[in-house]
Every structure is written in structure tokens, then in C-alpha cells.
Length: 350
Image (cartoon, rainbow, N blue to C red; front, side, top):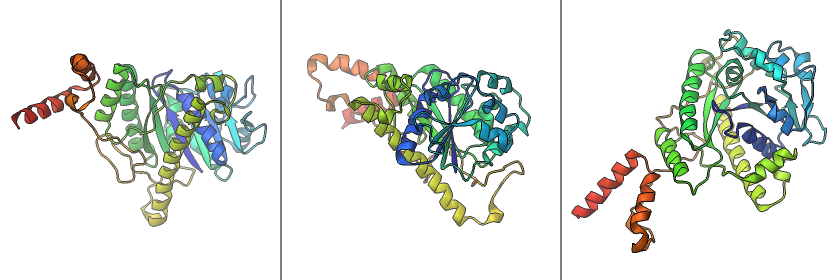
């Protein structure tokens, strides 16, 4: 069983949508999947067809991670037509906000990991939808995970939230659980025709080289329509939905490939070399955190190399050349503009 947290420190970027999209891809692939909803809004639970009042939920699990509590909080999703074990949901309730302490104890941070120890043979994949903050629930999720994915959108506030998220992740890994590794950053709600979005994409790739997923998600109504109808994106009709489903399939492959690299290292590494905390209840490999300034040979993301095209090489007529060059520069960071200027000067000397 492998565990992935899907997180964002800014609300409204589509974190739950990303969770449900990956759940849809996992179900289509035949993986036994559990979605854990830790968000008080319970949007993942609603999206998977479970609404109302529940005696047991993730709120009780993170407080008392006993086997009976854990099993009682898990229900079959509507997507799986009530068949348990295909795609299940650990439902959330608004009362889980009471457990979202800004200063949790070290022992509390391991509660969700202890809960998952009761399920290690029942699922292939666990997806955790976390709240959009850095309090106890997000930290519990990260401690219990093999990988952490940050979701963002191409806006200034979201870029700043990514920076905060990476710093917080590094602190969790350093001080609490060295086994969790950073998967990368996935950009959602991209509008490629907007200069501001192009600029923020360039900025993200410049600040976090090798950490931005090559799989991006454009803003499409099909996602909201499928989610509103309680349907998986893989079952929603239309070409737009099919393209989105294909993107989620590709992203899931990056995730599973990342897990596979851990499994190979586990076979190669002797037990005595494994660094496991006395609080860790699941048998997981120590992952290598990939800092946002370096590339790793086993990084599952496929970073796009920085490319700066000369304006005159593009098929733009003389009438619109100046306007096009001005628009192009608006999408570029200062570093890219300096590189372009230097390139132009060098070609001028030749």
C-alpha cells in the first residue's frame, strides 16, 4: 500500500478536484483505492457520493486510531456502486476542524499513520485530501504519506503558497518523519493564452527546477460538471472530459512510477540501513527528499528545459512584430529577459 497526500496552502486551487481525478484514474486502472477526506468542507466525501451525518468519520480516526474506529469510518463510494474495496472513502465531517490544532504534539502527528497500519493489506493506493492550511491535519497526512503532492494555480498568491508548503514539508521530514518524500508541484486551472499564467509558469519552473510536473491541467468545465453530478471524469462524456481523464492517467503513472522507485531501493537496501522512527507503524522506505534547487536521477517528473526563443524566428509579420515582442516579454521573468537580451547582443556582434 502506498500513500499520497494532495495538498495546497491556498484554498480554491482545485486540490479536491485533483484528488478525485486521481481516484478516477486509479479505479479505471483497477487499483484498490481509499480516499481519506481530512478537509472539514468534506468536498471529497460529497464528490464520492457520501453525504449526511456519520457517527464515525476521519474526525474520530485522527483522535482514536483503533481498528474498529478506522473500519467504521470507511464507506464504499457511489462511483463503485456500493462495492466495498474498489474505491472507498474515509468520510469527513465538519467536526474534524476541532482536531486541526495549530500546535499538535509529536505523538499526535503519528495518529493517521497508526490508523493506516490497520489497512496495509486492503488497498493498493491511499489518497489523502488535506485542508488548505498547515495545522495538525495536514501534518498528520504528510507524516503518514510516502509522497506529498502540492497543487497550485498560476497566480502570485498560489506561487507564494508553494514556497510556504515546501518549507513546511522540509521541516516535517527533518523533524518528524524522514520516510516521506516530495513528489512535486502540479499546476491546475491553467489558461495558456493568458500572459499572466504564462509568466507564473515560467516563474515556477525557474524557482523550482525539476519539481514542476509536465502534466498540467487547464481550466475546463467538464471537471466541475462531473464532480457536481457525482460522476468520475472517466465516465463523463465528451472530448474535453476524455482529455482530462488521459491527463489524470498520465499523472497517476508518474505517481506509481515514483512509488516503484522506492520499492526497488527497499530490495537493494539492507534492513540495518533503514531509518525508521519508533512511531512509524507502516513498513515504508526512507525516501530521498528532492530539494527545489536540484534534480534527482529518479525524479518521476519530466521538467521542461528553459527555452527562450528569438522573436525574429517566429512567424510574425512586421506589422505586428513590436506588439508581439512586447506581449512575449510580459510572460518572461527578469532572468529570462536578461538571457534573451544577452543572446540578442551576442548575435548582433556576430
